[in-house]
Length: 124
Image 1: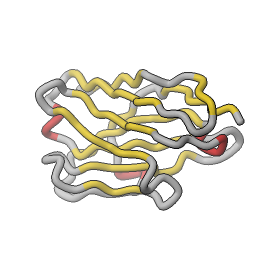
Image 2 (image 1 turned 90 degrees about the vertical axis):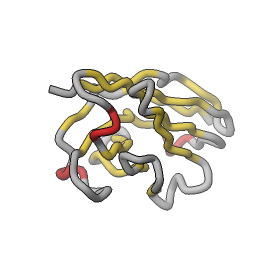
Image 3 (image 1 turned 90 degrees about the horizontal axis):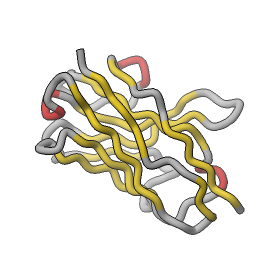
Image 4 (image 1 turned 45 degrees about the horizontal axis):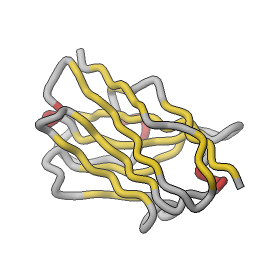
């Protein structure tokens, strides 16, 4: 059973940067396509970014494209989300998720394993 643990969430000022991490245990990270989702207060959980198991392809929601970068280090079994030029509307709980399908998907229901989330709060 694969387990995911996010960290790195904190309070940050608008325009600042932070990096989220997601450590995977139980199985090798390379077995999975990985994604970040987020849930803002009062809203549903939505897709943020995803990366193919090989690291060769990345996908982003339009709201974060050009500001956020998803990456993975399969040797360290760790997924990252570098968040630059953050905005108050980026405030949310951020979740990492794993999927063992052949192709990357941006649909929440396709992901089989989830972390508990890490809180990111952006002050204006």
